[in-house]
Amino acid sequence: MLKIAWAENYVHPLPEGHRFPMEKYALIHDQLVYEGTVSDDNFFTPIPAKEHYITEVHQPSYWEKLKNLNLTKQEERRTGFPLSAGLVEREVTIVGGTVQTAIYAIKYGVSLNIAGGTHHAYSDRGEGFCLLNDIAVAAGYLLKKGLAHRILICDLDVHQGNGTAEIFAGSDNVFTFSMHGEGNYPHKKESSDLDVGLPDKTTDEGYLHVLTDHLTEILENFKPDFIFYQSGVDVLSTDKLGRLSLTKDGCKDRDAFVLETCYKYGLPVSITMGGGYSPRIADITEAHCNTFRLAKQIFF
Image (tube, rainbow, N blue to C red; front, side, top):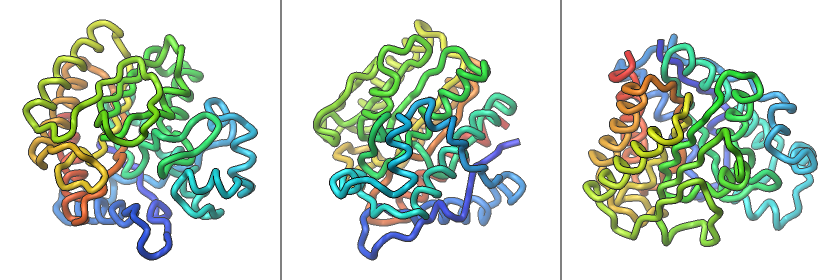
C-alpha cells in the first residue's frame, strides 16, 4: 500500500506576503484525493520525531536552543522563518514523517512525505527555510537500527543540499548526490560525495542526460540498499528562485527515471517534496502531484 505522511500542522501560518508557499501541502493532499489517485487510507499522521533521533545528527546544543526558542536574531533570519513553538513542532513532525516513510518504504518499496526535504539544515544551525534536516535524521535512524547499511541521498532540488553534505561528510555509509543549479543558492557550497552543478537555463533534454549518466554510475559503484529522494520542483522554468528551464513534463520525466530506476534495482525509496516557488501555486501543486502519481503507477 502506498503510504503518505501528512499532518495539518504542515501548513504553518506565516506572516502575510511570506514567500514560502506552505499552502501547497494542503493542496497536494486535496488534489490527490479529489482525483482518486489515493484515498484517505493512504495517509498517516506522523508521530513527532524523538529527541534522541534528532541529536544523532544535530548537535544537542543547537537542538536545545531551537526547542527553547533561544536562537539569536541572526540565526533566526538565516532560517528565513519567524521562530515560534508552532514552527518547531511542525519541523519535528516533518522529521517524524520522513522517519516513518523510510520504514514504510522498506515494507512497500516506496513511501512519500508531503513535506520534508529540508536539506539546508546543518548539524549546528538552520538555513534556507530548513530548521532540522529530516532526511539526515531518517538516514541516521535507519543506520542505527540496522535497517539499512548503505544509503544514497539523491537530491534533485535546484539548490545544493549543503546541510546534508556537511552532516555526512566523511561517512562511508551515506553517499550524498546533489544535482543543482551551479549559480544558485547557496553561494558557498559544501562538498557532497558527488556535486553536479548545472548552468542556468538547462532544459529537459540536457538535464535528463546528465542525471541518467550519474545516477546509474552511483548505483553500480556505491551499491546502496536504500535511497532518499529529494524531489524539489524548483527546477521548473516558472520557478522564481530556480534559474533552470525544465518543463512540467521534463520534471515528470525526471521523477519517472528515478523511481523506475529504484524499482528496477529493487531499492526502497523514501521521497520528500523539497522546494517549489513558481508564482502560480497550481504549477507547484501539479508538479508535486506527478511524483505521487508516478510512485503509485510504478510500484503498485
